[in-house]
Amino acid sequence: MAGAYVQLLDATGEFTAEAVTSPEGEFRFFAAPGEWMLRALAPVGKGERRLSAEVGMNETTVAVED
Image (tube, rainbow, N blue to C red):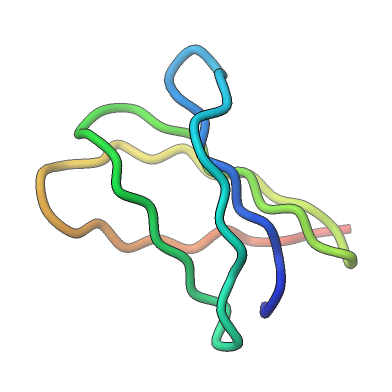
C-alpha cells in the first residue's frame, strides 16, 4: 500500500522512527537486533506486527485492516 506511515517502536513501546511506504508499498528501517513492533497507519485502516530482528536484512509484512 503506497503512502502508508509505518512506525518502529522498541520493546517498551517507545516510538523510534517512522517511514512512508514507497509506491510499491515497501519501507525500510535501520535497527539493531532485538524485539520491535511495527505499526502501519493508512487511510483505509491500521495494523501491527511484532518482529524479532536479527543481524542483516529482515523482511516482513504488516497487514492493514479497518
